[in-house]
Length: 568
Image (cartoon, rainbow, N blue to C red; front, side):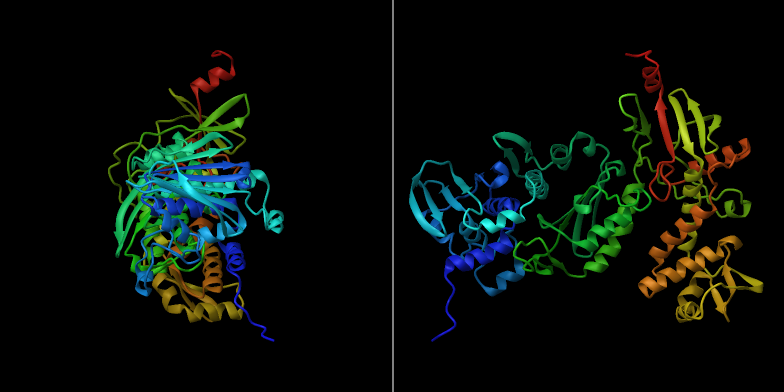
């Protein structure tokens, strides 16, 4: 008796649905992508009971005729890919012909559609079988109604998360689809109430306002360039809008939202020192590339792609992101930061008031200051401040006509030192001190062998070793910082098996800056305080330490008078 038989189409569709339709948000994604491919300029998504009761997607696209309605639910039926070569030039969001059959296998489905100059039609399916059809009164376009999702696969319910989690997933998918298509007007209706919408006027700022709120769209930094054959249009939000997850680094390739670790990491690296640990930037990265250089046929959900020369592109993107964040002139804004609820609110300096100057300096060292080439500063990076005292031996207190300012002396010193060392570590100049008495290194034999294996790269940086001893070191490295530098170099060699100058510069600069900066509870003289302010003004970013913590916080006169009830 034969043991192998062809699988029933309904069963095959249910198996396929496991990959395509994981949750209600997956249904929203697939249906909206079909609407976009149909050329719609307006798309409305209605969701009831977080998608389990019904999901309705209505568009004004080109629609389908009666024969297409019947073919649309057959597995691998598609209007987008017809021959093998088409897979190398995919320009639509959908192409596999799996979405509608997969949805029809796990839900009750109706589709109403009408083409221009034709009558409307509808079909209804249950268990992947046609149960009803006829004419329909509908505008040009398509309306898909998904009811009772997973009604015939109850085991799926135990894998769904809470109602709020499923709603959030739907909202997130809506946001990504709207952001990927600024020219399309989107509307999201949850349980009968309009929740979000976009204008579809091609304005990125207006789109961000509708998706993330008005504050986020103010002060956007933009990057418009090309890296090789890839056109880049990127928008970076102020670091004060940092998120706790990296999913708000939005990457779009040819208007398709994708997830790509390398590219998102390059954006995070570009925000380096502007964000605190475990915080991620809010940004939009639009990439336009020849479809033949992108493979979107990696997974049924089409959210993972393979990009030609992906690592090289990501490496080239990071410095461009950093440059975009550090250039441009904006007035200093004063976003509110809650300090004590319902009592008063403080104001942080905007992290984006970053001037173009490349000036960096180092405190308490005339030798280091001689290396600095001063450039004209078009606008003061910090306001004029009058020193009036110190609080808790750590926070310097200043005032001016606008209010009261608190400065963290350790964070300020860290920032100054970080910018100096970041610049110096990046110089591949053979400027080094030859030690009259070689310095003993407190490292193991295996660590020393690791240093010897990379001696050429280390010599480029100014480090020479012999017999577990250091014989030369760069002129910018002070004696008390040598052990910190060697430790950072060894850590990178153990982790990455090579010297990555970009990572080493960042790691080494942070370590040296932090461990050598002015400590808390260290009383400074007035001369030292004035020197600190002078050096801080020369920094590219005087508003955060290398770890993203604020350097300066402001209490406006209005805030203070409100605290004392002079203003009600």
